[in-house]
Length: 108
Image (tube, rainbow, N blue to C red; front, side):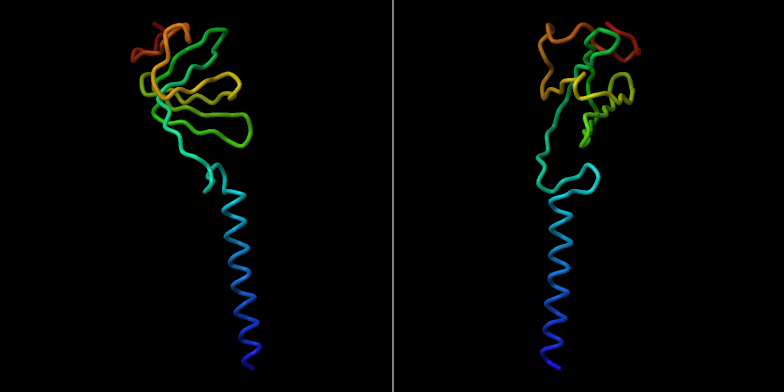
């Protein structure tokens, strides 16, 4: 009887380890335990042939090439390709963008 309890306990422990390691390495949605966290404040997004600077409230990438930005100044929620945007920790030099989005929902 004692051997059956040990086998059952080891089987349960192996199941828990397998489930948690799968979640840790495969991730759940866009969250990965191993992933690095980056704080980016600005994004230059290609819009209608122009490069527009947005001040970011938040951003989130996905396993595909898409990325979403929530902007501080214009309040927009932008869903775009990571190939059409560049994120920055600090405000980039003026030559990196054509226009800057401002509080009036207009381009400067």
